[in-house]
Length: 157
Image (cartoon, rainbow, N blue to C red; front, side, top):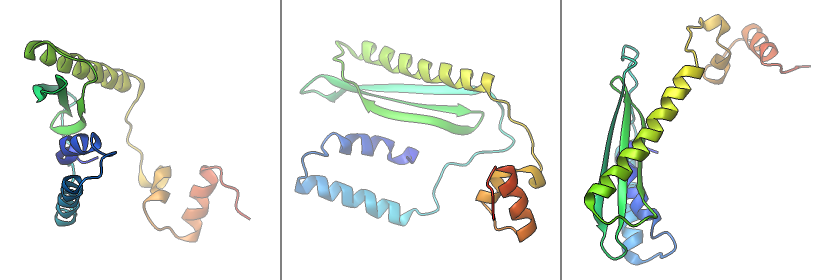
């Protein structure tokens, strides 16, 4: 999911069962946007710090009929966006402050999960000759291809 489409897809998903003319026009606009931005994406900097920053927000008045609210967050590792979400909550909030606390709680849970993930993963440098995932991203000659297949546990005849 692209970060710039997070909110709109959350909104469109709510009406996926009701394929009205308006809904189809909205889908068409999203598809035209995608067609115009093929090279757009999230950039991950190699020199980014390992500091985690999170931002959260809520829109208490997002659904006045049912008093449901939308929460959203984005989390950065240094300057790199690593997690984001937009979701209409199933609970009813009695105030904008309560909705903001919900958003903060959801964001805090995501940050806790990311911190846990950093504690169990170790990122290490691996040179190209030993990078097993290299075979999934580049063409190789017969010798190096056979070596990678062997290391991956693929038996070739």
